[in-house]
Image (cartoon, one colour):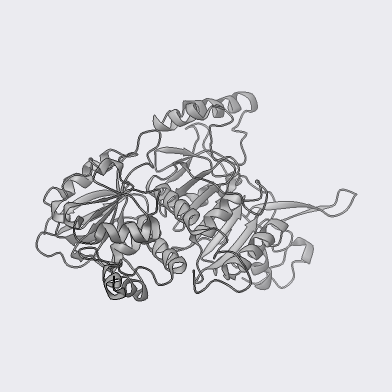
Length: 296
Length: 214
């Protein structure tokens, strides 16, 4: 039907059929209108297994157009199997430009991280979400969690955080750390490290969340409050790292541990590969690269 | 029957490239609802291609063509219940046309001066607040200096950094009160897309409004 269908693929533009796109688009619009609320949608089978980002892929397929530039990251990295596969999928089915640069992208699909480079107005961040329901591990019944959201009854989560403090002396959750969106809905930020939670708060970018297996879509519009739950005497704190990136010397970024040999050798490097490469191109050098010719 | 007679009775054209134009219209609607108060123009090739029967404007028709289908009953206000409007939407969208506002997934409001209540439309439930009507409200003026019967609003809430201002009209004198009531029902409530024929502005249920006197 479309005059712009690509010659390289026998599929409709961006793989999904038009009725599916309309259904997902309607769910996205309602998700934006009710920030943090999980809108049920008729998730489709995708040509990849659940757990590989079928929710995020369906959201991206429904919003993407030929004028977009797509970036896909997995744990902050542009070059892992999952990220490369999804990027190629959209190059093939949507004839879209791709990039690894955070600032050049209009749509960024992500698993587990928010880029270190601050996002800007007009960008869309699409999260791949495995468990959209923040209360699921506390209350397995969907009928009950739905009622809790209806009544904004989130005492159970506060009890869980309190029990953490009683047992461990601190809130032990380090990823998928629960947040309140626009003061109304409790939201799972997908398994992003809690390091990234503050980046969601009043971000100028639109944030969309897709959970394929669980069949839910939710959203955080730009400039919307996303507050991590805490207590007055146990305030929310992000993970801290006691060293800079071994490659680019960046501080206050999220680091991955990389094992270097079988004698205990290891280094800590930026999880965000684009951020790290950009900094190294600018001349920043970390410990392992000898820290020569550092310039701002 | 003559072929000419058949052509004369055929529904008027919609999108020339449904896949790409639906995507472009959706992105404009998404951006409008994500950042309430910002004005989003539809591409000229889209609004020019759609020859919707009066009183539907090209932008209002484009929104329905992009988003409505057999799953979404459309409500038409009294002004829109005329001529070929129902046949046009039935042909292009495959949607059921309903007279019951509370059943509608979309509502087309051709005459905003008659719209004084939003609580008659589907509001969703506390468990499923997403099951609510999206209203497409046609106004003569949008985003410009307010004319007679128009309102100027200051907006705040999700999607708005500080505050935003928007003027549109003419609308019913009770329209602003209806919007305020709609906000008070959050998380239930209807969502609005205002359009002047080629441009659109989103007013989702989250937006807090204050009327400016001028």
